[in-house]
Length: 396
Image 1 (cartoon, one colour):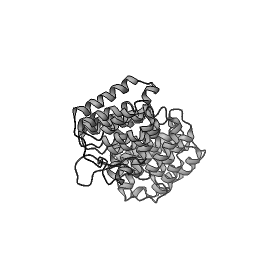
Image 2 (cartoon, one colour):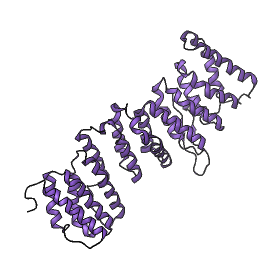
Image 3 (spheres, helix red, strand yellow):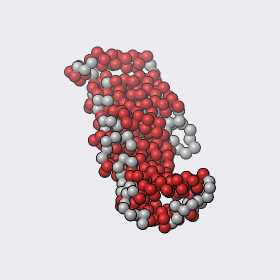
Image 4 (cartoon, helix red, strand yellow):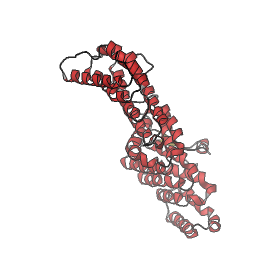
């Protein structure tokens, strides 16, 4: 069975995203709502029939034998999802209620519920969206598909609908963080710009604030999530970088008692983002901002045991030789303050590399009497002092 595929509205159009129907529907030459015949009009008999089927199913409870006799009643409800507006509204509520009792009709029921999420009437859509998490409550095998659909429905422009989509999607994240987040990460990595922005916004607003609690039971899947985030970080904005690094920071593998090698993993990600393999350019302000942000981000991982060698080497080989050509004082202050913060955590290996370079490029020479000048001198002398304690006779 082919799942429904949601797509954003055409450029310049107004409204919610549209979903293409199943392959079977398209093969008939119709849309997801084209039944090949004129829809039945809403009648009292049709609604009464829905309630009659509903009452039979409720009365059967969890009795498998009784439920097996009521397959036609559940199929009647599924068919009602294609009829009048009133029938669709009832079907949107009834389909999830009895979904788990008819495994042989799961695919048909899911497609019917997804079609209802694309109805023109807002109230029908709202009820259908609320029911989506129920479809995988007892059958988690459907969670990836439904997470993908809800992720695409984040493009809705209606405030009420958007709120329901986010609520339903968060319920799926709570049920299975690994599966749901992998689906959302895939949308960020492969989706169109509009979808990417909508998913990033959801992650920032709904997932990041409670990430620690949400991820506490997903330790076995953290490696897979880490690899997905690393792919995303190849091309991100500054705010997206902070978001995804913030999510990684909530993983149990990077928690309070994480081993040094795990901190090294995070520091390597920061180093990749900083592009330490590239030639430094003092004239590129955007590059300076990104570079300084990465240096500052690296400090927390160095404080937790990661070795700062990659960053101190870059400082000595790229930054210090061009230090005077960095026109903006805040950048010069920031890089020296980075060195001051990591100096107490350096080893003799880093000290023997950094100290001669501080002297060689005159970083310790007197500076103009200004706030920035005093801050630079303070950071340089502090770093020099600590580094000199790390290796014997290094100052000679």
